[in-house]
Length: 69
Image 1 (cartoon, one colour):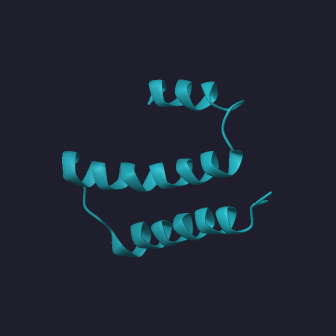
Image 2 (tube, helix red, strand yellow; image 1 turned 30 degrees about the vertical axis):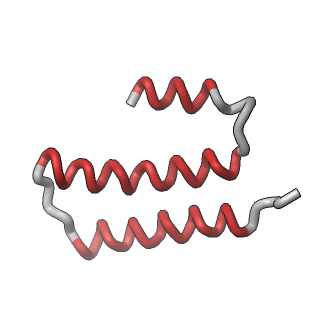
């Protein structure tokens, strides 16, 4: 996680903030699936699915409302 954070900070001057924000939101979902697969954590539909829908919806909103020019 530390390496990912360092890389994220390193690319800030060069990348589009819209893509970085969407990537960060979707990385949380990747961590959820990784924790289920590696650590055998239980997927709680009431909380985990709701969080995934909100994260994907937020990432899509950021991308769709971004300045395209």
